[in-house]
Image (tube, rainbow over all chains, first blue to last red; front, side, top):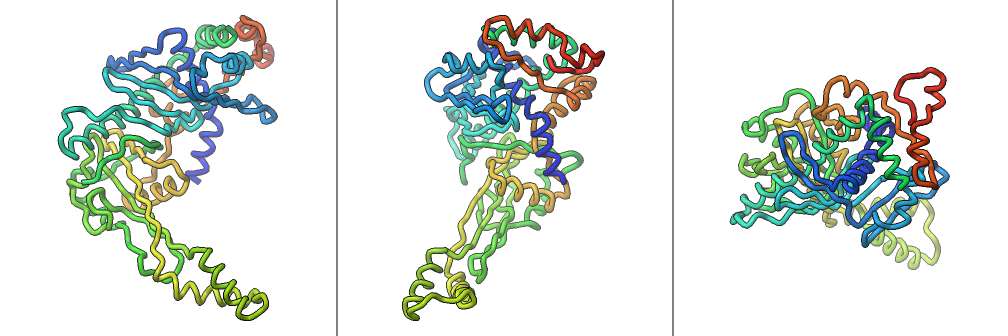
Length: 174
Length: 227
């Protein structure tokens, strides 16, 4: 029953994850991708070399773009112009000298193929290394949660459709 | 000591309610009660799953220091599967049919299989899967470093059997309900509808389409309608 409810939530609110990923792309292209998260944490986010668009209906084809700079391709712009949401993307996250990369599956908000930053130079023992890595795993989760909260505050605000959504629409059409 | 991985995939789970403090011996004891048990010598096809630690993959010991994962508590579980290799069955069946000079009947095939299972399975070693998770007690959050359905379901079952607390997998709705946003926004979440970005071949058409009232709004519905 619990599993059913969870699957249902992905099914009913998966679109929100897709809108979130598209919002990250929009903010990255129009605002540089720097975000100040709650608590004053400053992180940078960029889209990397993998994009996958969801089809707007069951009859349409899903589109996947790999390698190079897929966000700059005509295919990606066309997909946006056609109103497609981003379903999966390879993302780069940076905070200070630390950098993570991961592929986000938007409907479930699952991160796959994550690469953590290099181990800190001060790590001398296995225990140091494990502590450093677990801090990096947690930091990545917190960054994504922080970004998602920022997105939700905009998305759920009463004036979103006349503000952010309209600006996003212009960007998608551009 | 084993090393925590520095690449891979993860799924996030949350729990509600109280969980034993991982620094207490009671936490380690709870894991021990649902420890991994070997099926190395089993004479049937079996699956066994249970807790082990990064320091001891057998499930014999649960030292608190082996659970120390820095920012989180390092959980590890083991899934062993013992299965009769199909190729062996095929080889023995082919040999029996060749010796007989004709195909075996369904009943004979079943008997041969049962006989081989009994003889060969104690000699077959199970496949071993070790799955890690980091538990952040104060955040009521776990990162499971596996995404397969088997790993997710086994972990959820083990966690519940060990701590009596069900886990809830993170998804856009659950993460939103746990996000640091105002309570009134959380109420909006459940009834939120997707934005239907209109198709537009020309620049600006999308924005203009968004400004147009949707059929629902034109009909007097003021709720979160399609843009």
